[in-house]
Image (tube, rainbow, N blue to C red; front, top):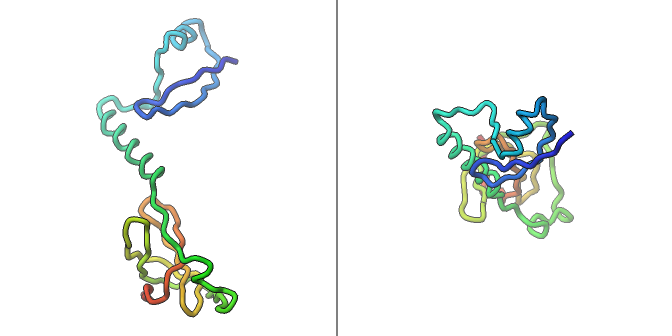
Amino acid sequence: MTFRYARGLRLGLRFKLSIRPASPALEHMFESGYSVVMGTNRRYAHHYDKLMERRLSEILIRPKPVSLSDAELDVEHDPVRRPGQPIPVRAWTRYPETSARIEGRAIEWTSRAVHIEWTDSDGVVQRAWVWSSAVDRL
């Protein structure tokens, strides 16, 4: 079994390929640095390269919501209540750069704060504790 390293196109990614060449001709292709890419669309390659770069950067720098701290929640003096089913809500959530109004579900709460859960446009489930005054029931 032969191990080779390949470099990702325009992304600078490195990954390890484990292959067994079927013929000396294939071995020569890998030795000479020939790139074998299966399933690429040559006509729209630039478009898909840009799309992949944008998605990778969104994943790597995806902002995380800012949740209330343990001191702000004070669960020792204000117990957490959980409903049988999540309640649909609209709430203001804080991010490091800005605030956003989202539609989500209240999964638990105290008398002063609500733990909300929502799914963002990429299908990632986010959760954060917010002040109850920032939440409206739908």
